[in-house]
Image (cartoon, rainbow, N blue to C red; front, side, top):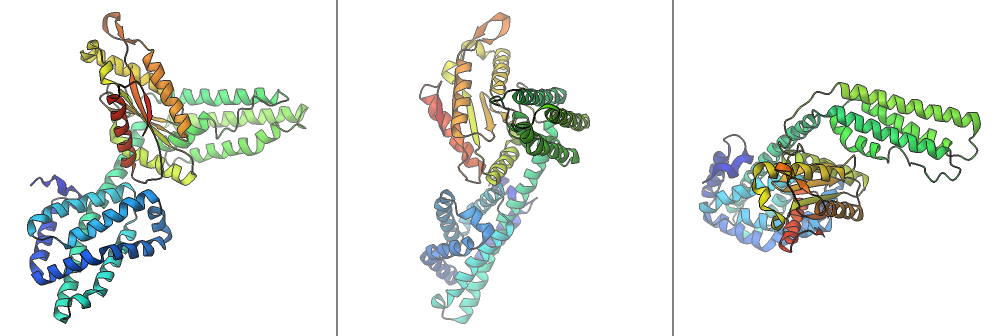
Length: 464
């Protein structure tokens, strides 16, 4: 058997856990196993309903269970899990059950389900089964044997789930930290100048707005600008834990909540207006000073970047996508993800040459990055596939972005070797975050949608 399915059970521990389950199976009298299997098959739906009533009364558990999409799938999965662990007919079925517990642990880790809520669920199921044993086993000794069997089976299953859960959580934490390091890329100087330019542009628009009586050119708040989006979604990763970052936010709030409202007031003119403009310039200069200090302390790290496009590769996608899902769930802002695939049918033989193919991908990546905003994240997802996490983007905005990318690719001459050029097309799938906590569901929707688009001829934008 491939031991890879046991990776969640810890270093070298999975065969021991399998043996523990085998020993539990063999130690229980056949009449006990048969009786419990029949009991579970009869009452499992009732127990699962009680499970939901009990867990929905718990505030933290309610957050994970009240979504209709989760409930419709979880009830069936939970019912299948409960029946499967107690109705094993022979030892040959146990390795498959072990693998299933590992997969459950991985799902729990992806959605960050608190471990104490898992234990509550297991405890409830055990209690409900114990309460029904006298009706199945009149003999007290058989009841005791049944109690032991129930608890040992649940303990082994829980052991496997928790082992996979803990290992995946630890791996996720390592990758999240690694992503932060990767973000400190060798072109941080370029990133710094880009943000300085965005800050200066916002300040320029705001100062122009103060000269117009109608204020129609007002630039909006700094927190809502492209610079603010970058500060919220990328700076928090670049400068994780830096005190200066909170200082930058303090200044942003001062500008948005104190200076700008006064500047836009009709009665503020003359010396008072000039003083406020000087205050705004000083605050913006202070932000530039803080940013320079933050960037100056960053090192460079090239690990985790795609060697061809210099975009982030898929290694850090789970950590970043989970972070953005958590951020948007907390704020209530919309979140969309775009998957962009070069249509196979549009591939010219000229792209068969590896160097020409690499040049096309490099130009494609630059085109895609140019279509994104400061807070968005761009990945090379596959050989000819790119992914964008569009932060604070409605479905309509994300679809407009997708259509812009599709149209620009269609009309772009991609430069190849010896001054030759060729064109390709792309299919772009757009998925909005629908509240499901498992990011893999979002990615699966996107992959299925791009497959349908390419099979349908490509050069299209579609919803996932």
